[in-house]
Length: 256
Image 1 (tube, rainbow, N blue to C red):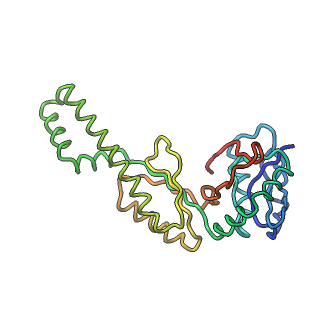
Image 2 (cartoon, one colour):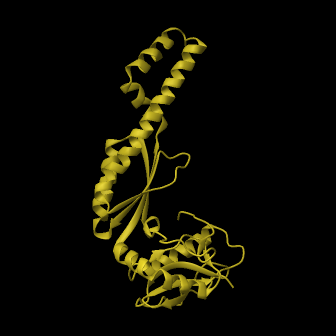
């Protein structure tokens, strides 16, 4: 049977409580596979696993329980190896890399920040800061709406101004919060967000980081900010050197 992998930790860590259940229905018992100074938190991989809320929570709960006692390198939901031996082989092959990551990420959490524009607020900002757009808008109003060509030109100008504002705000989000974090990982572009950035934050610096987020909100009232965290440091694990095909792969990459 295939092996589902939740995360990697030090082999010296205490075992998980038997009450902690993994993915699957019924929940699969979580096992600890040790290899030298490292250990992998695993269970049997159920057939037909899908990223449903129940399964995502099970994956997250295993990591939360394990992370309460020390650093865990989290695997993405759906990380599956052919069997237990394949997992311990990867631990042996990448031992130095994983030990370095455990040291680097010890005592740190991830915060993911997604930003989008509040539509009415950003339009008001664009109008207030662009005299040409204001003038054309007023001219069209006085002309009863303006001609089709005039309305089209105005619309194109507004779209271009909003795009420029998106780029400026995306830079501001990262530059404002970066000083309060130990590392930054820019996520993939996705529709609906002008910024999708993850920050690695020391647990002792969480209050400082969240204060910076609030300062960003106050200074950018036209932004909607979504804060997700604290999370295991998914974006900062770094898989390391290329692995043999099919050894440990993430079948799904889903953000909790």
